[in-house]
Length: 179
Image 1: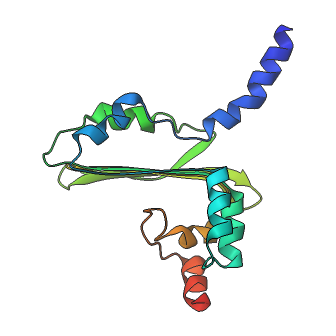
Image 2 (image 1 turned 180 degrees about the vertical axis):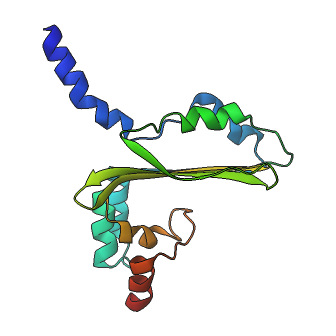
C-alpha cells in the first residue's frame, strides 16, 4: 500500500509543479493596487475561447488546444514599497531545476526593476511552460503559460490575454506574413 501511494504521488507531482501558485499574500496585493489585471484561463476556458473566436486562424486554435492554463496577475501601485521582496521570492522559489530553467535573470540596483523568465522543457523541441516575473518599484507582474508550446508559437500569444506583443524570429515573421 505504501509503495502504491509513493508511485501515485510521484506520478502526480509533475502535474502540481506545472502551475504557478500565487500565495494568498500576493493575491491580496490587488486590494492595495491602484490598478490590477487578473486573467485566469484553464484548459476548458481556452478551448471554449478557441471555438468562439471567429478571428482565430488554424495555427492559433492549434496553439490554444495545447495549452493547459494562462494566468496573468499585474498590479500597479500608487506608491513604492507597497509589496515586499518576500512576496516575489515566494513565487520565484517555485521554479527550481530540474523541472524549470531560469533563462533570464535581470537584477539592477540602479534601475527600476527586476525580471525573471523561466522555461519548462517539454521535450521534442517543445516547451511545457513559461513564467515571466517582472518586479518594478510600483508595478508587479506574473505571467504563467502552461501546456505544450512550440517556441515560435509564443509570438502568437503576444497582444492577447494582457500578454505583451512579442516579436521573435520565426513567430514574428510568420505572424506578419499571415496578416
